[in-house]
Image 1: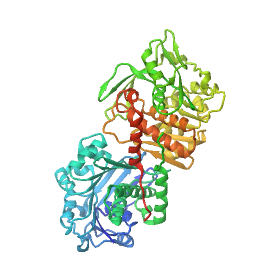
Image 2: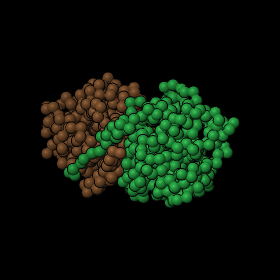
Image 3: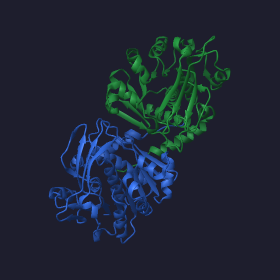
Image 4: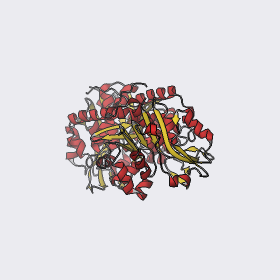
Length: 308
Length: 308
């Protein structure tokens, strides 16, 4: 079985949407990535950090999904990273109410020995220096390195971000971030420019409007599944990244055609994530549900035209 | 050959985009619909009205595309409908600078005798009473009636709009209009509600984010082609409607599967329309270009996943 190394936050979230609000619940990019990737036949491990306040049941939850948590450092006396946000009525935008870095402020990632030769590395959204440090620790060159990031690092750590972007095969960012990073409004032009920064593959996430995969002149589009109701978008992008990287790690095929399937699986899993608060839906999701939704994605996009 | 009856404006537009501005040029919903439908093997006619100021060369342009213009009334001494608008930098929104109804204010559509048994009727965006009047004049029940409309009629003539919506098979509106008409934010719920108003098929246009086709629980999605540059979005929605209705009229197959092809063709043709100002691109477009772009649409959306 191939190995997938995941780096990212494991955290507390407090979320408010038009449908309700939560107390502190399980969150974090690596959490969502790990849960999503657990639907594939891969050995996966998370590299992250939490405080002593982090409940054992949350760690157990990850372990029960066969995620290796030996790379999650528990800082004695430390407090876990906390994020709180409130979504607007359209669920497309949100305000951050509170961010407490806590133990994340001094995080030095340590890759477990057993994962230094992982075939796929998924660098979840974190400080680019942390992402680089993980790559530095790999003893063999991964088949595929995927990086997720956000506008915050473009604003505050652009040189460090550019350094790590240079080293990855795939970057996943949202449309606004692609525009900011490239200075191009057209996503086609944005992807072209981002290619020149390093990544052979550029994935642009458009939320409810789907995701685009670019490799030079090749383009593929995966729609988001039209849903009756989006309940809570938190973690959808990370779940997408987890589905993508999990599928690629399982199939060990980094061709453009296989990447297409990866972003379909990413969209598939993300469409479940948003159905309930936080990680709730991903915790109970069954493989059969994912397979059956794959048929919905096919029905949604496949057509058969004769030229006329 | 099947007949396609088109009703809608034939007009003057003056357009400003970030790339430049035009003087008064050829515009109007029926113009774009007609040009787009001319790529299919159908007999088509436009029912509309213009003033005496309307240049013969514009009428000749339509005739040269094999569009029957006997239903375009030329009002002696009258002035042609004029619209002027300026697009914002993102091209997703625009301000109307001027609207002069002119001859449109007293328009009484007269369907040419030869088209009273048209297989497909495409009701372009116009006052719903005009749309109804066209349907009243049909002597045989069309195989398919498609209606396009806009928020303006929802604000100013809702009862009349609801009356004509009841009578059509397909409605094409944009996402914001679907939300306004239904009172539902979720497009899935919006489509459900609009079904109950009459139309068996609901097409929701999302501009650069593609288009959704709903028939009860069946959903299909056609992406917009990612373009290097959108030059002028004017007429894209009408071109979409023309491609859709032209293809259906040609194939005379109103199944859900064939409607999918219709919205792919609609998206295909619309992707050309936006490449130049006004109708410019549609005037010179060749059938081979449309066919070759169809391959791009396939590459963009088709995938082949084995369950894993």
